[in-house]
Amino acid sequence: LPRLRTHQVTMKFSVAVSALCLASASAFMPSSGVSRSTQLYSDPNQNPFGTESIDYGGNENDPNFKTIRLRERLNEADTERRKEQEEAERRERAAEIAREERLQKIAYMRDMPEDTPAGTVDEFMFKEGVQDQLDKLDQELVGLVPVKRRVKEIAALLVLDKMRRKLGFETAVPSLHMCFTGAPGTGKTTVAVRMGQILAKMGYSRQGHVVLATRDDLVGQYVGHTAPKTKEMIKKAMGGLLLVDEAYYLYNAANDRDYGQESIEILLNVMETQQDDLVVALAGYKDRMDKFFSYIPGMMSRIGNHIDFP
Image (cartoon, rainbow, N blue to C red; front, top):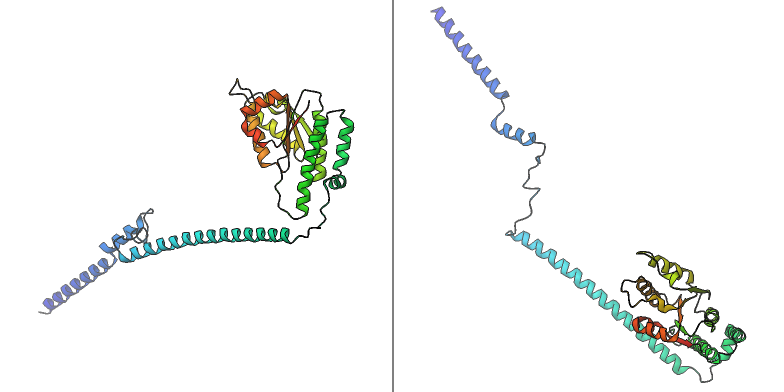
């Protein structure tokens, strides 16, 4: 009997130890949930925080999502409407300022005393040194009375424009680009030099120097050569007068691919945009210049003064 009890105790102890070992082993074994969790982090390219919450773009059927989109669109519409309103207010203010300035000028002219001293054209010519240049032109050119008279008329027009400015009137600077027509040796270069000095004396030119150019100075011999040459001559003449002698050679009606057309386009652009700092004078025979202007009407419209040398 004692042996039987000892055997039973031994069996119960063995069963207990086995159960304990199984429990310990199961505690250290990876479960299926842990395995899935480990698998989530095992892929280096997979987002450990999940992909659904990061890549979520909203559900269009969600009322909150629709409310947010509607709010964004309303904000964009408000921004555009505010910009348009600000632009309209800016234009209205500019127009109001222009009206006030115009009314002030009208009142200034209306209230100006009749005996306000304005001077005469001859007095201004003498003060500004213009008369001195006209006297030098008279000494350098023998005869050519129509040319001298035309030069004096142009100078008087500039003086009158300056007198009006001095009195506070609004004036528009007339086109100073010129055309000299006549045969070679009739004094076109001499007149150009004196006109440059007159413009400088009147403040319409910074330096008043004259740069003489021909087709060879403006037009290149290959593609891409004309623009740099033309711009270089224009750069030299800035602040003064550019005299293009025999300008009709710039255009070749028989060749549409002639490089002179590019030089003409550059000159037209400069004559329009840089007219306050550069005066362009074209010279040549009258019949050829008339034909040249018929081909290039934009050039004719930019020329404000014509002087014919008999």
